[in-house]
Image 1 (cartoon, helix red, strand yellow):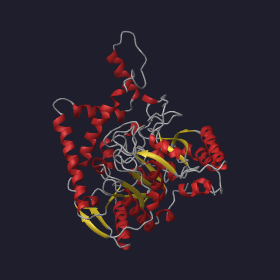
Image 2: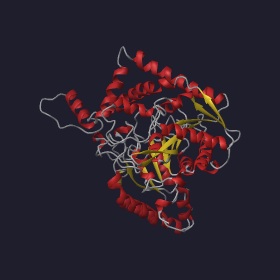
Image 3: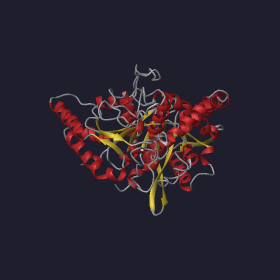
Length: 493
């Protein structure tokens, strides 16, 4: 069976047991990428020769009797804001269009050490700033379910790659929903771990207190397998927790009882598309049929989450991206006679950064400026604390997990919202609060919307207490089985 029809776990088992080879699995993935990527634009770099060499080397080690890792021979894709010691790491920005990293990000290296084969880097909104995967120097990625629509962002390339069967596993980053929202738009599983669960070393920083690396997969079990490989302490990342690694994959199939699911009152806002409310109801009903108690909870500060997020994230982005000045880092504009250093900085940053990145840098610089820091930034930090307290109160009251939509509407058309930044920011209304609180969450497909005669996926997300990934994945696995979305719907690729 070809690689695109298998889960990562099944494919690795076939390679380990000799039913197929890593070379065959990688060749299948590369052939499918070559056939479909010109239409989807999910990949911005494909490592044909390097991936085949790595696959043949793995097969040789297996023949020599070496014990393979849990991802032996699995083709994986890496979002292009994660450093890799070959190819380029561009963040889809002209500022870094020629940058070649001398090292590999910890999360990526752990996948490689587990036997995975990196076949390429995927498209994203520039520096991970966006909700549609349209703000990229490589052009937009298209949704495999309907290529006139967006795949979500910022990790749209990774989500589309998994949804179209180009690879069974891909990595993204999630600062305000950039894994979960595209997972919902593309009908795949997308996991945002607890802040500090997975090392951020080698992830090009957007907002350092919010960023987290996580996987896209076809199944919750594959997401659990990837997390088992990536999680664990990293001395290179001061924000990475010192908890010992856990085997999430081994425990994902265990039922959890008693099960009490909280549905926020704010999750049924009047701005939801009818298909979003229907998917939320279907997920709650499926869990209730399996014995869960469904209770309404009140995340009373949720309405402040988008405002707080876009102040905190922009402030941190302004600070993190200050290094890209064309002298120390990044693209340098051509020197003009008689021009001063400040002029060179200004032109280098104007030429290197796209419109959305410049907008967020300016916003972040403003909220941190003298006279405004207390009014905006410190107020946003106070709101962040209260948002986290709302979740903590729900969990302390006995809620096992919180069930929410991933976005208020199904995938929208390419170009529909690029001229309206506020409309794009509101796509994150259900995801940003989880990043502000630092909690783990997973998105899975739960229904479809029929738009223009096409079926489009609609996702829901589950949220658990900090470092509650075992609980989170077990509940998500149970919900996935109850909904059986992948058995009933495919994107047609």
